[in-house]
Length: 619
Image (cartoon, rainbow, N blue to C red; front, side):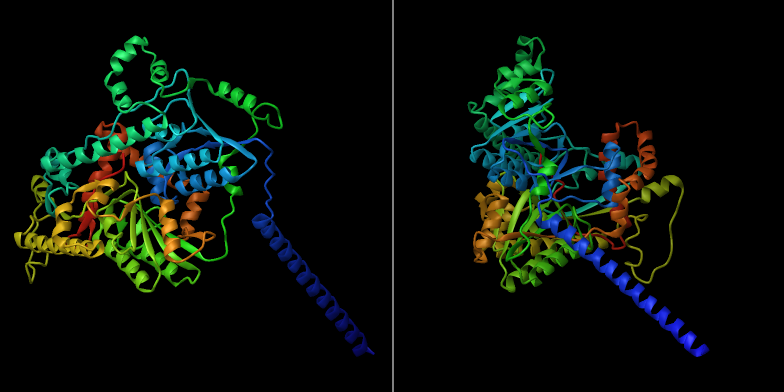
């Protein structure tokens, strides 16, 4: 009897447990099904509210125009030094994709460019944006630009709009190209730091600020030749876009004092009279103009519009099918691993290898925007591209704002090299900096002595003078790397090492000048590079573009989640260290960044590091 009761109780518990387990599984499966439905709707369902007819695309671009965004801790700290907040960025590819998609969208009637908060961007990047604006206009849709004021870079984009308006109290600043560098020879002498420069290349002027008080004649000649070419390209493009006479911009700049007197100091009137803008309007007047030209929004207070970020979320990339893989090589080149927005010899090589081993990737475009860096890191990347071509996958290099020195080195294993007309490239040269602080410790009354088994034992000690024998070893290695650089360039360009040496020597060129000297195959855009890669892989016109990028680290995700507060926490100490110099924060930051090169070199465990860097940026 008792067993029967306990048996029934046990059976009841077993039934209840099975029912509970079934319910648990059913609930979990239901939740999983709901999650799948949500994901599917998010991806394929077009959850965004449909756009109404005559919607205007508003490109209120806020942040620095970059090839590739980054969310690293170092970038957050650097942003806080410069501006007190986490750096905002606008990806060039996003601007292109939005404008190209909107050009084909029947609901989009036109575009409004608001460029007040657009920062940075070199000449090649700005030209890419301008090209996207022109493609949008070619679809029959008008573009209106408005700004409180315009910087030189912002105006490059605005000049391609059908109409340009500016605030009546605004200003357009066209200043030309070129800048003054800081030179630290006397300052370093005062503190007792000796900088030993070993290099190959007459025009390799990267290290001149550390060994001289002014530029060499060769550096001055090369800089003038480059900047004049870039400025001529800028003014020609703006004058063509604005239908101005050739040379009109230089005429305005040269006559600015007299023009300002005639306008009684009203710079906005000078700008309007010079036909650099089409009208002077406040923001509310622009809003009213767009209402009259289009449709009112749902509230009747503005014109019907869609914001840049909103429209970007509607642009769905193609997910399946054969693809051209794009590897971004952006920033300075180091040896090992590097986050997005910079180049690591190992990390970028890994991305290229991933693309090579992916059967859906049929060709690779390497998008280069780099002034160079480590020669070793550069060679790791070049070799990986060489292996990719050997595996049968075409490789096309697309040069952005800068592809110089190490940036040119990584471009030497491609089926085709395409540069923008105003890309800064070349700078084929090598150098090493060996800082010594023996005079510093002499001033402090500190002495160093000891016994080593060979003369190399403590030769890398920065507190001892540079041993001439070590200098001889370093110079020999620099000569060897330069010879390797020029021989690889000669093989890539199908010419002789002697001819490469004539246009090398560390000298920088524009993309157009590089084409004339056989350093690149042709002048063209990023879109031209994608098309070339697709054709070489025998893909049809319906191929997809896949960006091969490294995942953001978990730690950086945490920093990004907290909105850069981790970086903000250390910034008072960084700023406090710069304040006693008496320099404005921007100038102090530039000095700190440049002098940091010396401290980084001194911190290396190697006796020296061969560097392929141009210390150049696009104006």
